[in-house]
Image 1 (cartoon, rainbow, N blue to C red):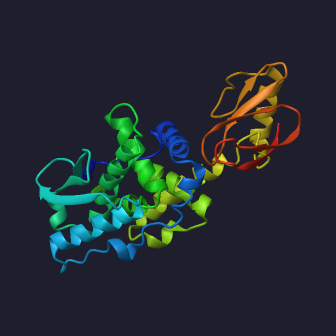
Image 2 (image 1 turned 120 degrees about the vertical axis):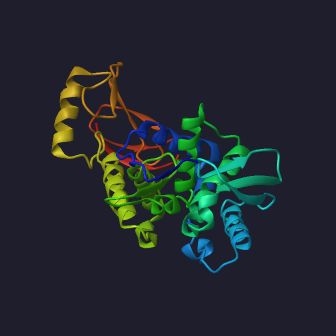
Length: 294
């Protein structure tokens, strides 16, 4: 797990394609029914860590909270500290014991221990369900996305702090990307993660991510699309463009008959419907019903 302290924090959405692919992979691996059992996020009280708490007992308590949240009852996390460049590391093996190392910095910066452990325990969870992306970066983005979508990633965003002289961020996603995934989860489960933030910068990043998540639900051919998007869509439809210009996510299949494909705003599964005016599409993966004007 990466740890940045004092260095400039990357912003924006540079990993967005991988994040969206990770959301889709979660739905495919877990099934929508299993995924919806994670409807309750990790509570702040479960990961609270006061300075007067005994260090190792407190770390084990927080690790157990993460294990329980991810329903890994037969997994035991053995946590230690050492000097290293990264925030944390986990040794993935057959189990039931998994060894997690935390950066020595967390001995005195305890408020972010929950965030670090959330990411590392998610590595164990993904290892157990045999879900991985190629390459270290892709796999770490998958882990950050899964941690956030399954209810513990608000801790990772809340670990982001930035002012004129210093900065700190945990994980591979940018703050805005964490906000995007949190907003997707918030829409699914009707929750407001912003009430748990202690970092003002986390709230700002969440707002930016939430706006992009809302844009996903306003893309043509969805009926919620705005005038400009509808106008661009109509031009591309007349030309039956397989890859329309601009920052759009729909594509046309000239057929016959002419069809349009677009990603489900919930699970990122691509949906394919005929171009014939108003239609109601049901996502074959997550079951979301979408009102479309094709």
